[in-house]
Amino acid sequence: MTNEELFSLADKVGLGFIRHASTRERDKFELFTKLVAQHEREACANLCDALAVHPEFASGVTRIAALAIRAGDKHDVAFPPIPKPQGQGQPSP
Image (tube, rainbow, N blue to C red; front, top):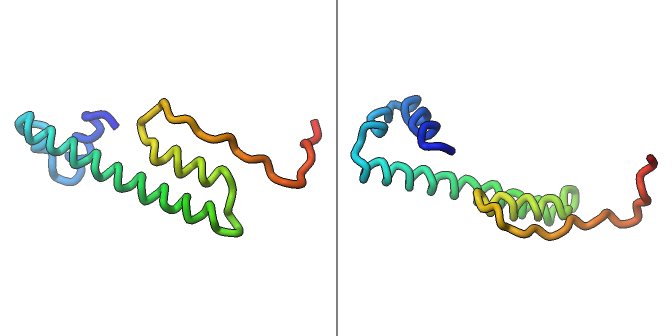
């Protein structure tokens, strides 16, 4: 999320003053927003972890989703291959 998007959200909740705050205060605000996003990503990844072991939803996709969510903005993360379902033939062309 860009700083402008963060300032726009801050405006919506009555924190528009942060746009004109000191550099130190703006840096604190940016750090706060990163911590909130990190917390939210971890909550989503934990949900994927729970689904990955649930009998009805377990799959390689849910495990990879958790890894992708935790990776956040990192683009150099290597993901394991998605396992193919057992006992299913090739799809018809």
